[in-house]
Every structure is written in structure tokens, then in C-alpha cells.
Image (cartoon, rainbow, N blue to C red; front, side, top):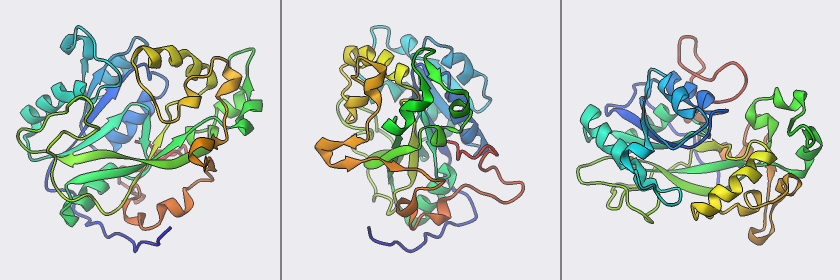
Length: 298
């Protein structure tokens, strides 16, 4: 892996507003942790929710979040994990904050390991218009299996007490995803067009900030969601974790078909963090920054 020179981020924040757009579905056990990070960075979140587990009420409890119910805007449903359901959020964002803004694409099961406001500031300083982020997907590994009580259907207490990235420390950083863009008039999300609205312009940011993705937090959840994924015709690249019919089948050491083995998180992501020092969460007293429990949240 090439070594990058440290990126310089201006202390002054972005000139343009920064807004996060979020899709959510049944993430009540993690969404408050995720939203705390966006609030710490003083970034407004506009969310569209399709949950039945109380996620919507948690979204509404945060003063920096505006939450819409997906069924109110798509009464006939939306197939798959359709990015175009965020078009009502994009319209709402333009009414409140205008068009010339940074839009960050968020999910309710992700913790932004690098500070989103600093990412936007660095993009603005560089003259970039598109953010490509590296997804650190934390997944159940065979070494985690002894810590799960299959009869009780939960992690053993000492495991459950750990922050997410330590509870499931094995991850892959194989995938990149578009996660932000500079908005302009006429852009709209479209089915089958990826995570950016067609017509998005601007150079891609030169660095690849990291996002922790915690889509599977225990094996029972993976099995329970398998049928939902089938019904939505959503085909995740790491499908072995989603299509097991037995909780014991959801622990894997990697993806042999891709020749990718999971790596272990030991408090940082090692070489994947090279050149990204300027994007770390603020640590100085008085700065909104990392919560004290050890996770670098949202």
C-alpha cells in the first residue's frame, strides 16, 4: 500500500453547510450511538425510516434529527435497499439549507471513524466534489463464536459489554462506497444508479476516510434478516453472513471467492489509516469529539 503524506485540514470549518441524509430500518439497538456522533459534530441529520422496532422514536428524540416515515412518501413500498427513497430528504434539505451544501450519505448502523465535518472541510479545501469512503465491515468471525450463548440467544455478558468495534473486532476494508457529494440544482437519486445522484460532478476527494459498518451485530440478527433481504431482492456482497439458516453458520473468516481474509481491529486500522491523520476526531478540551467509551462514533 502506498504511503500518503498527511493531509492538512484547515482549522476553520467548511464555508458550505454540511448535512447528513440517512436511511434506517430496525436499528433501535445502535441508532442512538450513531446519532450521538453526528450531534457531536453539530451536523443536522435528515432521516427516512422504515422500521417497526422503535427506531423512528429514537430518531425523533435527537434535536439535530428530522425523521420522515418512508410509508408516508412511498405507500406502495420501495424495492430493495433503494437509495432513491432519500429524494424526499434531498428536497427537504434544499428547502432548509439551500442547494450549495455538502451532502453526506449515512446509514443507521455505521460509525464514521473519521470526523465527518473535518472530511467535508478537507474536501472543500481541496476543491473536491465527491467522497469515496472505505467501508470497514465488522463481521462475526469463528473466534467470536465461543462468546455467543446460542441457547440464550445473546452474547455472554463480558462480550456484550464491549464497544462494537471490540465486540466484533474482525473486519474487512475491501469495499469502497460513494458517501458524499456537493449538491447542485437538478440532482436526484435514481434506482440502480449507485449511491450518487446521476450527473454528480467534481473531482473525487484524494483520500479514503474510514467508516465502521456494523450491519450484523449478532448471529441471530443475521438469520432473522435473511428473509427480509430476499424479499427486498437485496444482494449484499458479503452474502454468506446474511443467508445462513442456522446462527452457527454466520461466523466466517473471510471471503474465499474474493481471496479476502478478515483482519483484526486492535484499536486502530493500521495501514488503512495512513495519510488520514488530519481527519481524526477532535481531542482538544471543548471540542466535540470521540465519546469516552472508546468507540469513535458516527
